[in-house]
Structure formats: structure tokens, C-alpha cells
Length: 167
Image (cartoon, rainbow, N blue to C red):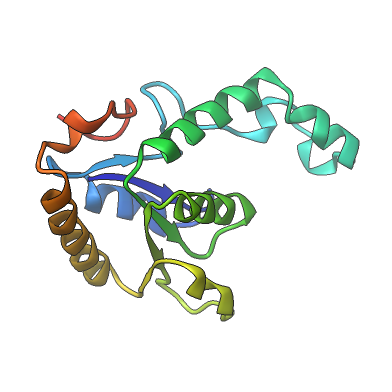
């Protein structure tokens, strides 16, 4: 199964989940390391004072080649994935990624590993898991379901991102 993990750079659970899910059966995209030698997109690559931008400066920065390259990697991985996991707490981009994937018919899991402010609209899509054991069980269930639908090996269905952990 091809897995995209949507989360925040500040989320301490994301790296552990990437390590846990990577296996010969599961290819996992890691936005923090999308390609060998690439430590992911950072606004500070465009401007060290990015937190002080006006709305106009922000709009202009979205057109910067560095932003375009980061977007291209992450959006290609979203298109590639079978499953998107939203790891909370996270910000606007992770939520946009997750609900874009759900809207495209991808499977979804919302991981709530710690207390958060309740959000009713998470009922829009996905299975809610509260620990890694539940995630492992849900991924296994989805994997079995998908293998009935697509008996070929996951790598045979489409190319994988360079950092997905496939052998």
C-alpha cells in the first residue's frame, strides 16, 4: 500500500509513524525527506523573514520556484497514494492535503495521539485512530481489502516517490 502522511513539521508523532509503517508491503512518503538529500520544503528557503509577509508577499512567494518544487513533490505523492493519514495536531496544509485525498476517493485515517480540541467535521472522512496499534490494524484491514481489489504488487500499480522506503 502507498501511504501519504499529512502532518505538521512540529508534530513529534510523524517521524515515528513513518518508521512504523515502512515495510516491504507499505511504501510511505515522508514530506520531511521527499528525496535523498532533500530535507523538505521550508518557507525560509524563500525568505528568512517569511513570518512577517504581507498577503501580497505571500501570494508572490507561492510563485517562487522553490515553492513550486516543494508543491510538485508533495502533490505528486498525494496523487500516488492509496491511503492518507492525517496526524494531529497539524495545520492548514495537512488538513487541505488530507481532505483533498479523501475527496479523490483515497482511503483515510485520522490519527489523534493526544488530547485535541474536538472537531465535528472530521466525520467527513476516514477512520479515527487513537494509538499506533489501531493504525496498524486499520492499515492491515485496508491492505487486505485492496489486495482483493488489486492483486498485483503495489509497486506494479504505479511509480513510487523516491523516499517511500520501498526496497
